[in-house]
Amino acid sequence: MKLSSLQQSYLNRRSNSFRGSLPLDSSAEVSGKSPAASTSWLLLHAACCLVSVVIGFRFSRLVFLFLFSAASRGGGEISAPFVVHSALATASPIAKSIAATPANHTAAARRVVVGRHGIRVRPWPHPNPEEVMKAHRIIERVQREQRTLFGVKMPKTVIAVTPTHVRTFQKLHLSGVMHSLMLAPYEVVWIVVEAGHVTNETASIIAKSGLRTIHVGFNHRMPISWNDRHKLEARMRLHALRIVRKERLDGIVMFADDSNMHSMELFDEIQSVKWIGAVSVGILVHSGGADESSTLQGEEEAPPMPVQGPACNATNNLVGWHTFNKLRYAGKSAVYIDDLAPVLPRKLEWAGFVLNSRLLWKDLDDKPDWIKDLEELDGIDEDIESPLSLLRETHVVEPLGSCGRQVLLWWLRVEARTDSKFPAQ
Image (cartoon, rainbow, N blue to C red):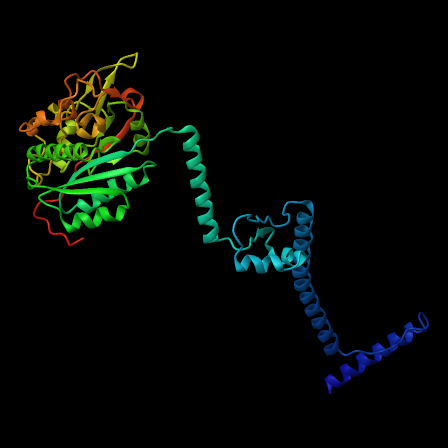
């Protein structure tokens, strides 16, 4: 009863207010709305405002990025993709298909924008194998022409002498010297002298070189002591020199031990030898165990790498020899191959000398008299430590490599145990 009276009074007041406002604005339209309709209208308006804010922010961000990316492209920061057209062999099928597409379509397809940055997409980034091989052939021809113009006018054949024997690390060492000889830009004759007899293991390795090889056996097995091994290797090298004399091979004889490392400049340097020359050899003495290395560190500091080779004065004349100092390793060097101790070289290694093969020939008209004949060395092969034993006068040696200042090869001896097992090949 009370609620109905309150609603009646509220309606009377609203009717009185509308009637009172008619004289003020007679053209206004009188309409009544319920509170529920007003509330729903307010909620709908708030939802529309929220949706418009979200959509408007996203749209404004896209417009912002679009305008600024377009401006940067128009300003020249990201220009048309740079395309390199090869003038060599025929292009690949993918490159042909890309070239056949219209220019505007290709440019539009290659323009990729991530954020504010453009990504340049190039067609077929991988090289064409045919073009690569043709480029290598062009470079090889250019290098050959440069050697003809600026290199040695009349190159001599390189006669490499390598003593070897079947062992665990033979393929490792022999493959290294083989690839060095294969890279030499001169004609190479490779004389391989094998201790014991000729084996299929060694023959299969040197057959892959493609060089002219002379593979002979030496009727002595390789000993297990380093001193006896050095003496046997000297006899094997002399055996190879007798083959050079017998076959009258013409060229420069170098002693390429299978575990040494050679610089490519060495092959260019030895071409200037008239009779006999010497180069500097870097001696890489390794320590087999921690005890030896700690003991050697406690002694006086030695040079970073010992060097054997010619010693010259200020006028680039030979005055002596740089030899390896063994006093620092007294009592600490390896005696047998199985010893875990540094392996020391000879006083002067054969690898540091090169000589003209005509010094070994018989009945040579202009043969100098300071060279000994190989027949004089029969029976005393074990006493020969270096090619200096072939000379009657040592001052005739020609120092190479800026008078011995450049190290052109490195001496290293690393071997496995004699009883180590290794698979065939």
